[in-house]
Length: 210
Length: 210
DNA sequence: GTAACTTGATAACAATAGTTCACAGTTTGT
DNA sequence: ACAAACTGTGAACTATTGTTATCAAGTTAC
Image (tube, rainbow over all chains, first blue to last red; front, side):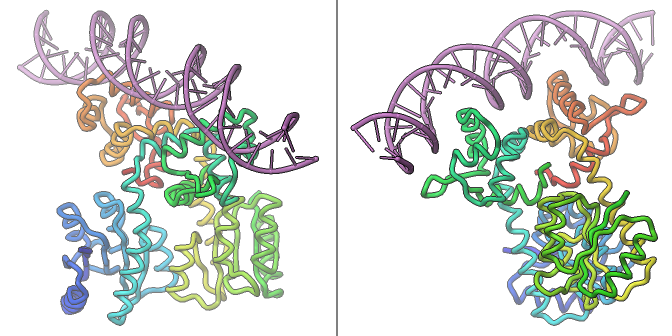
């Protein structure tokens, strides 16, 4: 079941949103301040947090880094009545995944929640891969280069990739390719041609290899 | 000298912005489409790109990933007359560093440019560190744990950190700590107490270690 | 068919990473 | 002052990573 953490200091709106989300089948924990939200996040796991921007005490945006400390994969949606482009940009810079304006229709909220969860879903994949192997695989310039080239060309045959990485000894390159396969970043398709796994694509997107 | 790539299909506005930015001492390359901007980015280095959202052909937001392909550290500002919170959020999700609304005052543009460059400045630091060493250092759960703990506690003495990482043999932990030092992620302050380097803080921020 | 290229497996080896042990100088508490 | 805990160094050793050489099955070109 998807668990939602809601921080909203308007009592009536909070009750309404809780009711709405519970009808949608979510499990909701509602609090009235950013501080309370942080405290809750230390107690139990949440998939997504809906934070009002302006509350007495800490703002929703200020709470983001605290929430992520205990729940690195939590999706965060900032909700605010006074949203401008600037406040939205600021919230995104500070780590929000989305920003909604108040007032909103029930369906807008549900759609935003579903989309934010979907976008985070890819991140969850990372949880089931072995970070030791991935970092170890990235700790070599040939392999980082191979990944980048593979990302650019989508699919490459062994020798083509080998040449592009500029390793003259193909057996040496074969070794590095195996390391990439072992780390789950690269695989061969049915025609034995090398492609990135979606893990590989994710890693490449988020690591900006140099 | 800071080099700016400007993509704007309104000829008059483009000329005005070029004039303004050159007066401010920037070196500006101006084009009239996202496609032309991508082509330029393959020719020379830019510190920052100012992209109009709506142009004939590709939008500014669609060009972002292409630009980053050749220039991973480029800062990107999306400029648009029809900015809503939703379009701004979308642009940020796709990798923009900031979003500005048209029309804007000269000073707003200059301030936004300076701030975006400053925020990217941290990234440049990464360029001068050895990715082999960093990834290698991260390829071990003890070391990732030590980094996380160090980030939470800011500063820790050797034995305190060792206990928190739950390694019983302090000399074994000492080895891993040396690896972290060698990678430039951790250092000792004047009182010999262990702290993260700013490289270490950057890595921790951007890797969300699991 | 055969010569050249492709795509691997395997073994032998060097270099690096990681562990453990022994020991020693420095702080800290009492 | 003395013991205990702290903060290391260095040597010995094992495991893993990375390189090189040899060999071989499959594919393609002619």
